[in-house]
Every structure is written in structure tokens, then in C-alpha cells.
Image (cartoon, rainbow, N blue to C red):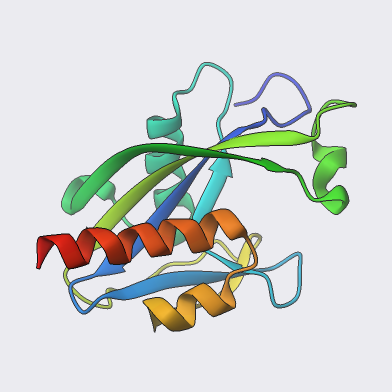
Length: 152
């Protein structure tokens, strides 16, 4: 549990995809038409990889230990949207987001945290890139496409 009231400007993004090359997207409850992968800030004394695993469980009900979880050892820094800056200490304007991926075999059932997300969809990579609101999320999906092309 966080001891201070502000979010730490370090987060994890987890791209969940299946063997049919579909990407799981979640529709934010607090912003209309804001679709994203699993994402969330680290908590005090938490590593990004641990935040990634925690957020996947909290936001989808998926236990990462049951599937292929990957630390892509990539990160992006982005400007925090003005409408969310109140969550951070005054003067904090940027966040560092660490990128992870989770491969599941097919469209598995998702148990949403309704305070955070109101619905989910499995979409092919091109559709998913058009739907997400964050450029870092687009970049993660593009990276998935590159990895899948190299692997096939």
C-alpha cells in the first residue's frame, strides 16, 4: 500500500496478446474512448516487473505465472496528460513506462476491475494500434509485430 498520496512517475505497460496475434485492449472507466493495454504505476519499494505482474492480476484476473511473461527491457518516457497530473507531486510532468508482454494461448476470459475499465476487446494488431490513445502503446504493438515477424 502506498504511504504517500501521490503516484510515483514510473509505470509498467503489459501488452497481452494471443497466438492468433490478437491484442487485448481495455476501455478506461474514467475517460471515454480511451483504450489501452494493462498499465499502472509502481508502488513504493516495488520494481516495474512486480508492478506489471500485479497490474495484470488486478486489471484482468490473469496470473502471469500461468503463461509466457516477457520483460522486453524497453522503456519510454512521456509527458503526463494534463488531466492526470493532479495524481503526481506538483511539478512532475513526465513518466517512465517499462514495457512487458504476456502471451496467452487464445482469447481467455478477462475479469475486469470495473473501477478502472468498463469493457475489453481482443483486436488484431492493426486495429489495436488505431484504437489505443497512447503513442507508447502503439510503439509496443509495433514492436510485437516486429518480434512476431522475426519469430515466424
